[in-house]
Image (tube, rainbow, N blue to C red; front, side, top):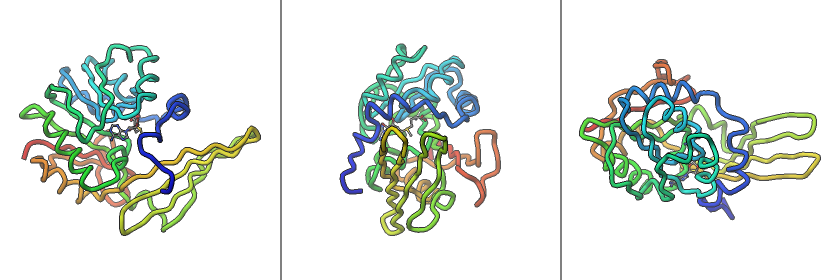
Length: 242
Ligand SMILES: C[S@@+](CC[C@H](N)C(=O)[O-])C[C@H]1O[C@@H](n2cnc3c(N)ncnc32)[C@H](O)[C@@H]1O
């Protein structure tokens, strides 16, 4: 997208309002992940404001994080329990923490925030590098077919008397790049929150894992073990050593 820079998409404004409208799956996500962390440590790639890391920490897991945006980390630090987490500002495709973990995880479509196939493969390799011998890498993402409605489409995100928020999208089937802008039209003005993503089919993701020395050990269509099929809104994929 012309004028878009990944490092600026989670700036101070987005960070401040990130937790205003949560997804609502935080407790289910944390319970699922806690089983793999085995009350030890876990590493979240793109930890953000700790939406998932904090409920996971409440379950007795010591959560470390890597996060590109210092603004998201500042917001995490302001939240109860956020000060104590070990978080490094860096790129999840290359940043190391110097530790290994029973669990590394990357949720909420965030693997798509890396805009090249090479970068996404590097992210899988970086996850593998951080795993204990029997550790797992958990990735949650929406399959492209559940998301894309043609080459251009608009979703209505929120409607109130004072403002509407529209999600305006353009998708390039050849590059797998989705350019998205969340546009808030209000009586107080217009705001834009742009983001580009490179979407990955589950099968391509499995090959990325293979290149990183991992293999798919489980895939479900939700955090409560729902069956994954073509109607699933997202998949939760668990990768372990090949
Ligand atoms: C949709 S948010 C998800 C945050 C958190 N994982 C959650 O579930 O709420 C995406 C996050 O990924 C971060 N991010 C994007 N690209 C990144 C990268 N290459 N390395 C580390 N963090 C990245 C953004 O700064 C942002 O905080």
